[in-house]
Length: 142
Image (cartoon, rainbow, N blue to C red):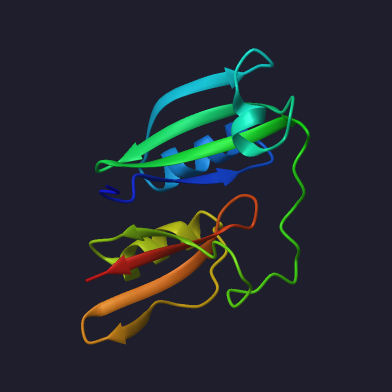
């Protein structure tokens, strides 16, 4: 029986840059960084024989974000014209105690936002921003 959503995975261009972003800007804790060489079954699991990657597991309040920097084959960039309406995973959501304050801090650090914080429903503030590879993340305060 499936119990719960355990983690989300992102393919990134530069593992160190992404670790720094999620650790330093969003407060995630690095659990481990591993090298997936040819002796590991990563290629079999992901349907790309002989694939190798550097993988980082980051944790925040019991949830995990798994970052993959594929060393072979190298990944493709997110297309500039990708929209939230396009099929597939469209964002990773984070809970915030004060979305507007977090928005101000992250914006000061140069993080690109899709809008200013919006009161989506009464007392529910939401804002979307871009991670280092253009991935979209959400801050949500309830």
